[in-house]
Image (cartoon, rainbow, N blue to C red; front, top):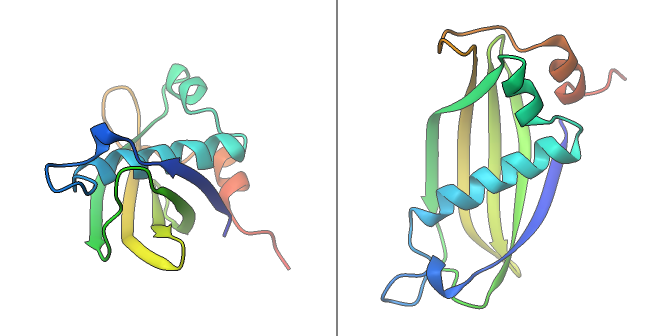
Length: 133
């Protein structure tokens, strides 16, 4: 499956009183990674929203492995692990140099504006599915 990579600088407002990234801020970083992954692959989430197709987080798992601190520049990798009929399963990790900071699994559900499940549009599926060999 396709993979995307972004870099993220850690700012003071990302940290807690111990000087490390506050745990819930990683959820924001992961969202940025998924959004940038989609944009880099030609999926304009706002455009799809305007057409009535939304993607919402329905599940998140995060394992915290190593602290990131103010001033660090981390790398965030995003990969589609699985495509369901109406779900996208992402695998994401954040690293700092050679250390794994977090490992995460996130599931998006595809819904309509009434919050009812819908099948992922074929145009998006074609972008995210691996090429046939």
